[in-house]
Amino acid sequence: MMGNKFAGLFKPADEYRLTSWLFLKILALIYFAAFLSLAVQISGLAGPDGLLPFHQYLTNTYRDMGKQAWVLIPNVFWLDASDTALTGAAYAGVILAVLLFFDRFRLFALSGMFLLYLSLFHASGIFLGFQWDTLLLESGFLAIFLTRNPTGLVIFLYHWLLFRFRFMSGFFKLETGDPAWAGLTALNTYFETQPLPHIGSWYFHQLPEFILKAGVLLTFATELIIPFFIFLPRRFRLFAAAVTIFMQVLIIATSNHNFVNLLIILLCLFLLDDRIVSRIMPNGLQQRIINHGKQAGILSTSVLGLAAVIIITSSLTTFYWKVTRNPVPEILVSTSSVSHQYGIGHIFHIFPTMQTERQELEIQGSYDGRNWYSYIFKYKPGPVDRAPRFNIPHQPRLDWMMWFIPPQSSMDDYWFRQLLRRLHEGSPQVLDLLEYNPFPQQPPRYIRVLAYRYHFTTPEQRSETGNWWRREYLGIFPYVKPRRP
Image (cartoon, rainbow, N blue to C red):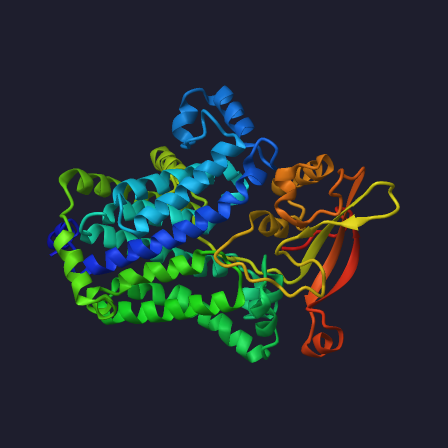
């Protein structure tokens, strides 16, 4: 029996041919948004005059590791990491996404987008080191094997990817012992303390506490129980898809999380099948897709089989080590490390701890040390009368990373000092990441950072003042109490 199931993994999954075609169409749109989002930021993040110049990192790494660095840091920027090369790579990804959407050169487009996004992933360092970036990388890698008719194995790997993202996110909420999750109070503060709230966050923050607690219980149910339905018979998978999609729509209505919720909804397609997808497709299109499909060859099947072993081994090894901290064989450590460098086999743990207060930093400059003027970011909370902005599927990477500075972690200290240095220099690439530069003629002589505690206003306060936020001055950063957690 087990042998038959194993052999079935390498057979065509004919019930997913239409689903795979639709999946690639929507993946092209998500790739398009992800690359375009980076194209307008990458110079300020990783260019020679940006926050973390990638060419310096490559030079230092090659000096320390030699040619081995080419393998361990896979990217297309070894010869040129200029603003033109970085931005050009992002726009090239946009073009490839268009090609994929129109069914042109699908294998070339998917392979190229994976390579380019992996390159930008490494180039952007901490600014692109998020779990949705690795989720997109693995989704895009597996999609390469959908250019021919899907096999049972690639469908299973998509199920495994969705399961990991959902279940591990719930598991680590409990594993950390965070009191907000354990006490069902996480949503009491989540809407106002998340990295980038939007206007929907303000409205959901006003809900009664019993609804917010019910929302925490629903979160646990959808992350700890529903993911197991992925591996059960069809009716359970359909239920898992419906519940998961419902949760993602709720998150989109309350939070700015770029393209990740759209990507999770897309992954739910493989919990459905052609019996459902065919209902929204014209018969002529269905027949054309089926007629033009080709079976996966031996080479493709062999590469996918090897990738499956690496993905499953790496993700299980990393999860085991993360939970137990027990030593694992060196070969598993090496395999996991390399696979992560290539964007596959990661683990996930979205919001394992919940912040209970929002601390915002306001960067100011001055020519004389007496008159101070504030820089304003595009999306993060700033002026108290400005409505929180909706930015999905775009992710403003600098705005998002500013959320990590108030805990005063040494890991984020360097790039933040780089930001202040670039503002002092008047770097055009970095200033382009901001909405308002109060020093358009020449950069300021002095720079300081003020810390505030932010809260959403109540409906009564909002009606009276017109403000979405109220804030309390804490002092000069970093001479204030760090935010915890």
